[in-house]
Image (cartoon, rainbow, N blue to C red; front, side):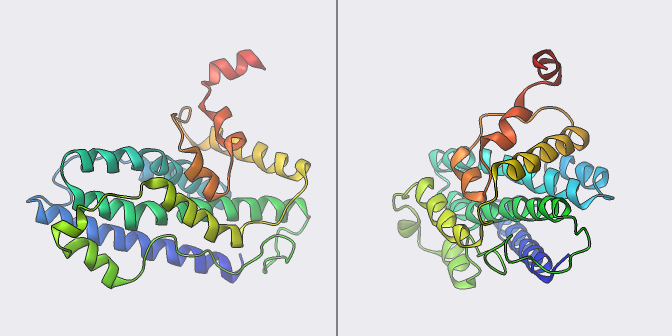
Length: 243
């Protein structure tokens, strides 16, 4: 894989480490700690199932699990805000939500890359072809500025309680940045082939249908439209009946 691939996922890892740090600190402020409550192991289960296949890992971890996070985060933010916990809502809204869009975008970007590279008959290419991508690395969707992180964590309550501009502005800002790194236009047949491969890989490596409702705007910002995921929300028995 090209250098840009490693740059993207080093950034994803850095983001996730920061997410854990700020949320773990917030839990301690609330009198709890990470691990105090049970959690599912779906991510680790998927990581194990896809450990032998980069294509499957990108599809399931980043285009299914990360995308599911985009679906539920706006509601989660609203629930914290409605419950009076503006500080946690801001952590999710300002830091985590926009960065998760870029993580999903990384999965979509490099899944497409692998499919197009294979389609072009060069499975060992070591650099990003100029006709596949328009920039070297994905932009940062949230903030790496530690001062901004500390402002959200430690800022005065009056400032944190200011009305939010909503999630639409966040999504639009990230979408505008990611537009600079999107794949150039590919023909409909090539895109359809990529989507068919995605459906096949997800059905093989992910258990069960995808769960709607979908955050279509955030998913669009990440680079994939309903044709990628809506067919996977249909139960297998229903899909077979249609076929």
